[in-house]
Amino acid sequence: MSRLTYRRRDLIKAFQRIIHAESFGGIFLFVCALLAMIVANSPWGEAYFELWHQKLGIAYGENGYLGFSLHLWINDVLMSFFFLMVGLEIKREFLYGGLSGFKKAAFPAIAAIGGMIVPAIIYIIFNAGTPTAHGFGIPMATDIAFALGVVLLLGKRVPASLKLFLVTLAVVDDLGAIVVIAIFYSSGVSLFWLLCSAFLVGVLVALNYAGVRSLIPYLLVGVVLWFCTHESGIHATISAVVLAFCIPTEPKMKPQAFMEKIDEEIKHFSHSEKERENVLLTEEQIHQVEGMKKAISQVQSPLSKLEHFLHSYSTYLIMPLFAFANAGVSIQGGSIDFSSSHIIYGVALGLIVGKPVGIFALTFLCEKLGIASRPEGLSWSYIFGAGMLAGIGFTMSMFVSNLAFIEASYVDIAKISILCSSLLAGILGSITLLFLGKKTNVLKSQA
Image (cartoon, rainbow, N blue to C red; front, side, top):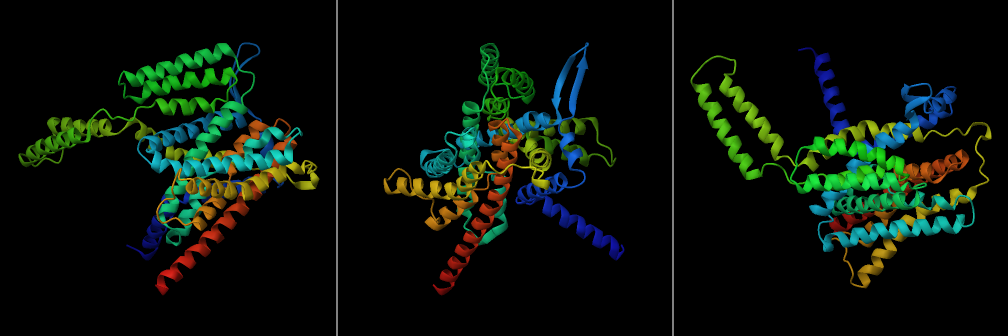
């Protein structure tokens, strides 16, 4: 084999390692956001903005049309799959993960609440009495892909418990963002469609209670639920979270029964193989292979199976596409009116200052009052550093800004504020955690 072939194989393996790295999602998001800003301010800028207004759907009759603009397909339909994954993650964490018990959940949950309340207050202080006051939800959000990506890039320089703390905090933060969207960013609720949605939620609960473990019925009902929720005036992505909470966690086959089944099939398969020399499988062996495939499918939790399936699409398609479609803002020729500077102050100070202060202050107060205690191995300095990284709002903040403002100039100012503030929060958080990591290593070496 030639040296060129070896080199090509090594490059492919290196590329695969980069793609499958946990930090890749955050890096890819950043690249797509940067690319969107470049294209929006290039000679192709006009085509870039026109693209997202193109209609995509089916025309019927004389004036009938079923569909949305490309921008709405991404923000309402594709993002529903992202919210479905978020909902599955929240449910898993509450049942089996870092939020499964009060002692484990209390500290990061309190941190998340502090990280939502203080940024919202800061935003309201600067925007109270203005047409932009409704955007208080923008600095409340944390982008887990970016924040976790930074922690993973820092590697062993930060304690492992920091990753768990940040992930758990972000899960509660996502839940808070979902509640805020449902309550404050819904428009003109229709009682009829709301009742239809409630009925469909009842159907999902009944399916779960009846022990239905196939995902197909849930997903079919989920599609209709999305439509009814969209028509009700509540943002349709909320239906995806409700669907996630109704997906079963119990598999059809218990692990012990699965192992017994696989052992039995392997024994029969091996016995059949000894009696012949043909390379082709016998009918009996094919039957045994099918039995093993069925058992493998049945031992997987429907929740875990769906979450695993959605994770790749979310990381490599949905989130990057959302970033590319929403991060592009034209800043050429003074096209943006920066007179609404109160949005900038509210978003920037909310994310950069409000997040770390809110997370640190509320957790510090609760520990002193005996309500919750810090995870082992996490100093207050690391808590503050994690709070800085939580100031990376990006995806969820941009999502909320699209809901909060109708006027395009407000949305553009909010997006620029989010991008700059998230970048600064990431840099400050990284520097803080790097400094703390070096300081900890020095103290260890002296000891």
